[in-house]
Image (tube, rainbow, N blue to C red; front, side, top):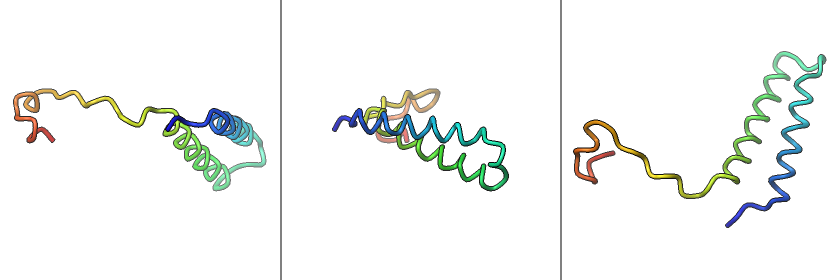
Length: 73
């Protein structure tokens, strides 16, 4: 199911506003770390909504290339 463009936009606004909060001088210490953690969580959600559901197949290197397909992982 494709991601809702309105939701993607709202997440972008939330990220921008959280980044502005990080610049405020009263936000420091554990509170600043908490906002950074929340910002990372929102970015993660946005990335998961934007990225395709099926990741590209992993490329095999070295000895993995010579192994039968079932033994590669």
